[in-house]
Every structure is written in C-alpha cells, then in structure tokens.
Amino acid sequence: MIKKVMDIDEAISYIKDGDRIMVGGFGLAGYPEELVEALAKSGKKNLTIISNDLGSPGIGLGKLLTNNQIKALIGNYYNWNPDVADAYNSGRIEVKLVPQGTFAEAIRAAGVGIPAFYTPTSAGTDLSKGKEIKVFNGKTYVLEQAIHADVALIKAHIADELGNLVYYKTARNFNPIMAMAAKTTIAQVDKIVPLGTLNPEHIVTPHIFVNIVTKRRNL
Amino acid sequence: MEIISKEKARIRIAKRIAQEFNEAKEIKIINLGVGIPTMVANYINNNNIYIQSENGMLGVGPLAEESEIDRQLINAGRQPVTETPGCCYFDSATSFGMIRGGHIDATVIGAFEIDQEGNIANWIIPNGKQLGVGGAMDLVTGAKKVIVAMRHNQNGKPKILKKCKLPITGLGELDMLVTELAVFFFDGQLILEEIAPEIDIDTLKKLTEAEFKISPNLKKINV
Image: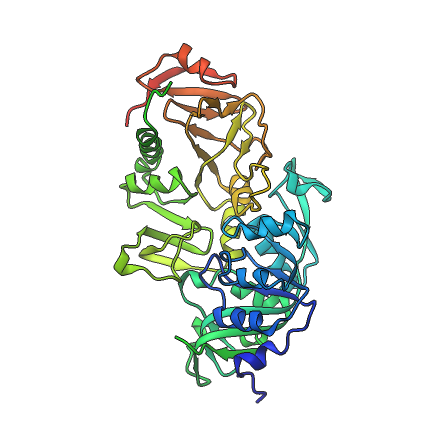
C-alpha cells in the first residue's frame, strides 16, 4: 500500500511558489490550523488562496496576508478581515468575489468534471457583469466556470490509513468539495485509525480524493 | 423624530416575523441572516420550524452558553451555537443546493435599502472598507419566500426607496418587508398590510420614499 500518512512539514513541501491553493473552513471553524501555520512558516509566495474568507487579521489564513505570501484571492467574504480590503485597495493583491453558493458549486464542478454551469444567483447584479447570460423558461441565469486548484488543504476529524475521511459538525463546510477539486489534497486530521475501523456507511470523503494525511500535533 | 426606540423597534420586527412561523402547521425550513433576523429565533415557539445555516447545518439551536462553546460548531455569523434533536451536517455545496434548489421555505435577511420594484440591496456599501458577498445573493434568489427585516429609516434617511442607490443583491426578489412602522407584501408592487399603532398613513407616507398601495384589509401591527 502506498503510504499516505506523513508529517505536516513534509506534506507542505508539496506546495510550490505560485500555486493555487484551496483551504477549507468557514470563519475559524474547519480550517486546517496546523497546515496553514506550516504554510505561513514555509515562506512560499505568490500564492492564490481559494477559500470562503481569510480568517481574522493575523489569525489563521490572515497570517499569509500579513506575511505577504498572497498574490490573489478567490472567495466570497472578507469583511471579517479588514486587512484584505486594505491590501486590495493599495493594489498589493487581486481579489475575485464569487457568491458563496456559486463558489461552492464551482469547486464541486471542478471536482466532478463539469467546466461551467448556469446559476440564477447574481443575475442582474454587479457580480454578473461581463459574464454570459442565458434565459431558461423565462428566468435569467449566469454562466459560471469551475474553480480548480493545485493543492487543497483540508481539515477532517478522523481518517483511516487510506485517507477515507469523517468530519466533525460545522467544521465540514467546504472541505469535502475541495478534496475533490485539487490535483493534490492534503488532509489534516485529529485521529488516524487502522483500515477497516471506520464504518463504510459513515465515510463522507472516499479515499480516492485524498493524497496525503497528516495528524494534528496539538489536540 | 424617533417614534420607537431602536431596541424596541428591533424586538417588534423580530416578534412580528416570528408570527409568520408560529402559525405553521407543517415542517418549515428557514434561514436567518445576522442582526435582527437572528433575533427572530428567540420568539419562535413552534416545533415545526427548523433553522438552516448556510455553513452546513440544519437544526440550529440557541446560541451556546459559555460552558457549551465548541469552536467547530458555529452559525453563519460565526457565533457558537447548539444542536437541536435531529440536527444534521453537510458540505457547503449541498447547503447551497438546498438554498438555490428552492428547498428553503423562507429566508429572513437584513437590508440597507429596498425599492418599490422589490429590489434588495444588502451586500455592500461601496466605501472601500467592505469586500464580501457571502450567501446573500444565493439566499434571495433561491428561498421560496424572502422576508426583509429592517428599521424603517436610518438616522432620518429613508431606506424604502423608489429605486435602490446601492448595488442590489437580487432583482425583484422581495416577498415581505417588516419594519417597526409597517408590514408590506410585495406582489409586483409594495402593498401596505399593517401599520404601527403609533402613526397614521400620512405620517407613514412622509417617512417612506417608495410608492405603495394600501391593502383593503389594513391592520395594526399586533405583537
């Protein structure tokens, strides 16, 4: 069996300067704390970070901005971290805002081989400007493209040694769909159990979507 | 002129919206935004109502007490919450599938402005300090009923306009608007259904920029 379980620093060594990186989480719930910490320490730069938000100033993903590691952001809600608007207004970073449901579906689409899809969300608003519009049954829809990544950093609660994953409460959020949408998926988990221990009916992310499993050091 | 204090206004709006759900005889799934919408939950006393939170939870309970706080269990406003019996979790694509797919019976949201064409502006005040849309556009587009909860005016400035000045969140998506002074339904035009006991229609017209029709069944707000 190929060994997927590795140390957090070794896992982070798979990230290159300029990579597009998806990071799970919503606010400070469900983001892979120790992977983000290790990425901040690694000094990797020119990153495109694809995430719901950017944590808080200097906390969680906010650290990557404080460290000037970010080239661009794709996400939907940066009001919890005012550093983002400052960096955007001063031209230090690019920001692409996508409505949250469109963002989620675009990530899911990338994972399941769908290049683009029509959604009613944002029709008639500033966020649909420049996008293709089509009417189905009298209702207006906006064409949105799938969002892909080089690496996904996700958080789950329990993994088996193959990388099957089980989540915990609202820490699930974007993690299962990001696992499907990246070329390399690295999962930070609280616990690793032997094969055959997880109930197959309870597995949320099948191991086919997970390349690397790292165990959280500080529980 | 302040007709009702800010705190009383917020409570009245929340209570009036809760009435919509307290009468439900069958299961209703609702999504509550931040601010006054979150307060609506305090006045719902009907076991048929289940609260969905777009960060991936159906069956949101009351805010967590200090001793119950679990940092991995939050609502979409990042507040620690509790579970209700039968609660379930799911990923964000499934969550917005519920929303966009028309499975949510009602969403209660705040707004900066509403106009007489049913447009809602609630996602951004362009001042260079905000950079976020969240789930607002998906919610107004997808929920079966869109209920806006907001103060009638802001520091004396009208919020119910002929035409929204701020960037809109959705086109003509409004179904019901509840302020401390009035309840409007929207059906191609604003229809005044209820008015606060403290004022008459002439006063309301002075405080409202938008044109509205008066329902033949006009009532006083009673909460």
